[in-house]
Image (cartoon, rainbow over all chains, first blue to last red):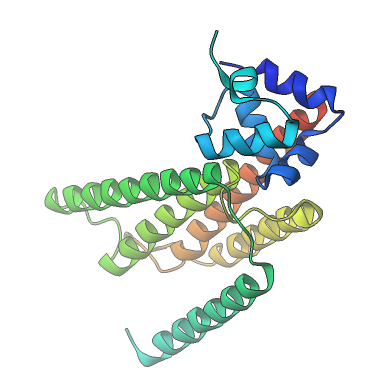
Length: 64
Length: 165
């Protein structure tokens, strides 16, 4: 399932996938795969992404 | 296998090992969790390709179909497994991926090597109804082509993905 909330949060901070990837310490393709729903990140990576975007786990990764 | 063949192979393997170790120390590249998982999946696929190819060759041997000498079959199977691993690793961005600025150089180099190997193989391919050792060059050429095609596909995929951002 696509993660549109992650994409919106990233866009709200005017960050490209590459910039977010560098902040989090992963490759651009990993961020792309997470946003497309092709990859389920570990909790550790989810937390790192949340910290980089200033959001909570629920806001970005909880399934509604 | 004569000493004339063993020594060059050992020297080539040693040279590759030295280059890999030096580059590994210089780059200290960190692969993220998705890349490590993708690399493991590539290893698994390559392993099962290797085992399946061995079974097929063994089965053909049981049916008395000798398409090449045992040593040629062995090297071709190993080359096939390595190529499968490299192609999957490149496509999933798990390993062996040239950096962005070197990608086009990498693709051109790969296709050049493929063409060179193909040129060498044009000499003689079949000897006494069996594949000669020239088949190494043909197969190497095909493997390089596969790597090149996968690299191009990955480049196109990455460009599309970047444009969507």
